[in-house]
Image (cartoon, rainbow, N blue to C red; front, side):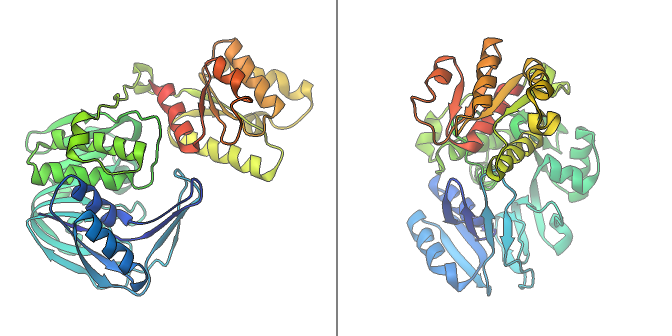
Length: 401
């Protein structure tokens, strides 16, 4: 059996609208249960959401043990790539103490879990004030730590990847360190052998990001601790299972896992060597809503490691003589044009057509336009997506491959 110590939270996403009661612990428990694993979730829980998570435990077939807290934490997302607003933060709850053979421990916002086990997988989940595994008295004979690259560098202030992995392993007495690298998958460091293996991420047509990291940790922990796979094999299985989660918003089972074979993301040598692909961000910016979306798309693309040319930010408003030549130079110099096309703004349509005329690839985000309005774009090999997060990721994958 795997015991999970992790949060149970309310999660709202404004667009596409989602409301779930999951959190890292709830999501991980459902993921392992879907694989047929025996799993027990121990978490803080308020009376407001207890009935819902109890029903989920019965339906998904996992054991639930809760410690009462006065208010449950709520996460509010504008969209799947947005930083969430977090409500009811409360860290005054007493620690959870767990003795078990195999434990997945997530960082809590409302307390901490002091664990004592044979095997442990730990994801601190908090960049600002991450709790190191042993700092609260936790013990494990075999420890795997899962961090994303930003968390790891923030905590240890080391840029060299090999040195960073070694320092995490030594300082935390970790047998395995998993360093997640976004579109480049993850690195799996085995401290016993001093070997680093790369596990790819996988490309999907649709991308639902909220909770994908929880799903990865759950599948890695199940494969490594229960199925006794090597850390590399466990991370590879977790990466595929997470791709399925992102594509379907569901949890994979063993039968589907055998058949599921999404294409791995292979980075170009130029990107590996530090080249930043340039994205031309086309879209109207005449209203507050339009400006907000341009600003959001620019930030999301930059956060994913891309160089963005935005006519609004880099040229500004002005007469045709002031802006058109500069904008068209931007189209010539870009690697991909990302177009926000709802509303069929004439300038954006022109930029799309100009880019295709000079054979630049175009990704179109068009949520509410008819097939008729998008016919010319579709017929000229533009890639069209109705979902914002999926459109952003398709742009990234095209740029770095």
